[in-house]
Each structure stands twice: as C-alpha cells, then as structure tokens.
Image (cartoon, rainbow, N blue to C red; front, side):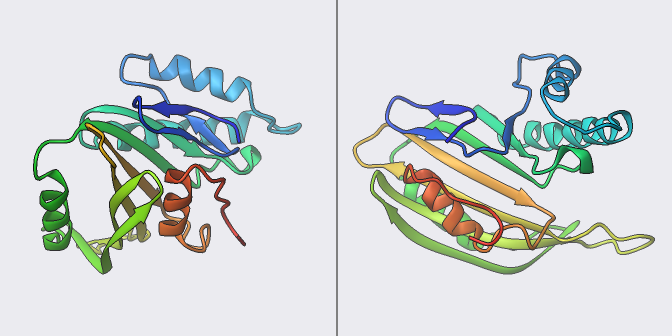
Length: 204
C-alpha cells in the first residue's frame, strides 16, 4: 500500500496506490497541484492533459474543502494521468466522539432525504462492524433537481462513520465518484480500508 496516512492515535489508514493527497487547509493549492503534476507521467504530449488534470484537482480540492470541518485529509483517485481525469474523491475526517454520537449519527443518516437542489435516490443506511469498532455505512446517488441545459452526471456517494471500540475519536470516510462503473461496491471498499485491508477499484 502507498499514499497518505491518516492517524488519530487509534486507527491508521493507508490509502492504496492511485490516491493522491490533495492540498491541506494550510497549503497553497496552486503550488501543491503543480508539485503533484510534476510527479506524474503524462506521456509525450503533457501540456493538454496536465492542464485538464490541474483543473480537475482544483475542483475536487474545492469539494473537499466544502465538506464538514475538522481534522481532514483528502485524496484524488487518478488512474491514468494522460486522460486528465480525477476518477473519485476520498476524504477522511477525525473528530471527537461525544456521548450519544453513534445514535445521533445513525438517526441523521436515516432521516436524510436530499434538499431543494439535490435529488437523492437508492439511499441505504446500514449498521456495520469492523475489527476496530462499529460504524454507520450510508450510500446513495444524487442528481441535481434543475435539469435545464446539459445536466450534471449522477454522483455516487458513500459514507462510513467509524466509532472505534473504547476510543475517544472517530473517523468519517467519504467516497464520491461520477464514474459509476469504477467500483463494484463502494461500501465494501470503505469497509476494507477501515479494516486495514487493501481494497481495489474496478473489477475487484
């Protein structure tokens, strides 16, 4: 396994190859993205795909920054740099566990049904167990309510809130992708990641 490491003192998560650490809250976005691009192989014709990938990395960095605040690390999944595409966003947030946090999170996950701008379809919420603790796994697809012009593609979203046994901090995993064929099971992917295993994307 390679890539970034998230450690909250109880759980250490290593992200598999292909996930690239995005700029953190205190980093200069343009400088960090330039450094990312310098480390990738785009083939002979670099300028055009590198420009598109830079724009894609800025977009997912902004999406990650809009997620709930906290001690957060986020990663972009780049399978083939020459395509100029980011295939998915993975973000992990560490937070203190308050009394009743598990039940409150479960209730909020079960009651969520979208908002005025977003239609949520095929939503599922499950209580799960991994070796380090129990969790709440939710999954859905979102579509923008406004359909004028060229519609935005559907977004697959998966969230795993992990509450380690006897711990004072929890980890929330967020996995977002518009490539609906990328993962055979996004929930299983996050569960394996949380369990310290090496999940794989695509035909796993």
